[in-house]
Length: 534
Image (cartoon, rainbow, N blue to C red; front, side, top):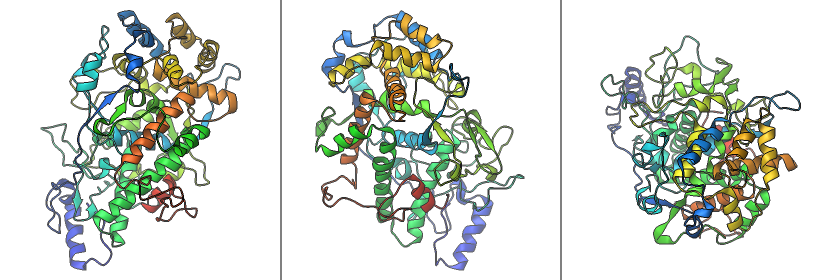
């Protein structure tokens, strides 16, 4: 359901309102202006593959974890110890949060969904089995396909699966709730959805968006709504579809480059990477662009550690929202209307209050610091509705096994290859001791021999925890920072309408044109404000 355009005839407004009230517009029938919701905005692109950053490195087994059923058991054991203990050994107080607002946890997830989807469900079918084995390098390089456009082009918003009415993107209406709704919120605060389907649970109220993963929890779902609304505001201001989507796309790229990366990357490393015309390590050839597995399966999974178990002041109608509850709110993994509620769309009392997730001068939810622990709800995830493959409920275990199956190099081997001094054994031991006073993580790490031969995802998290212990920062360490910075910058340079494209130079850079809170700047808060949700 699109928002009404300024200047639209009263008759059309009335017809549109009547159809919306009956649910027909939001259900996939023809709209008042004759444009059917089955028409989608597609941005097809050639499928790309995944590969390792350094082929020669992973072709030497000395740089990998030992291939053995014992390694699988050791990884499972380590993963189970990566639980947030909720207190510190020396003070008994809760582990301090980072200074990063929680919205960026989910904006990072939004970016991940934009550029990565490992289309290899059959290959990963055995990952939950005790005797899972690494995949051959040939199979990894030829059969694991990235089914997303690997560019910052917002195909999750505009691509196949999304719906539009002429130049407007379809936005869903929230459902009535006895609890009422947060002040100042309108009806258009849900994703567009199909109707109920008792016969097909995979179509039952499913979101009509370019990537269904953006409906797997309520926060990222509400962020996707903001992008749809921001686009529609430009259409309401007399932009055409192509011009509006280009503007939103470029401002989104700017937020990734100047807002997200500057919060999570070592500033010296980010500046060095940006000043170079070409990357030092990630140099894919034009006819075989790929996403490095060290990025997709390790470095860019740092955000899992930033997820909170609960979010305070979700809105004035619901003061606290547990993570398990937020996952239950979508048709991707739970009940759309919440536990015990069979609502056709999101109920109005669960529209997010973004003021409590970004820094606007009010008290806001902060992301957890990046370290080698995850909150408890991430150890009991549920499979997608209709899933048939074996499922590993622990995200920590799943990430460790994924790295093993994909033959990721150890953190130390990758650091040495990049000319970076690896973390010393005692530095890794210190991280394990500090995050887990029970010493379970320390014991699992040392007894497995992972101290000097560390799984890459764990190593990336430990690097960040070590950096925080040294200078109080909230960013990734040198290996993690370099991988993320180089990959994102390369993706950005190759993206449609790139703000780093040849049309712009250091002397004449791209500058935001949409209104921001500061002159010449535009961050995530500005996007949410422009969308009318902040």
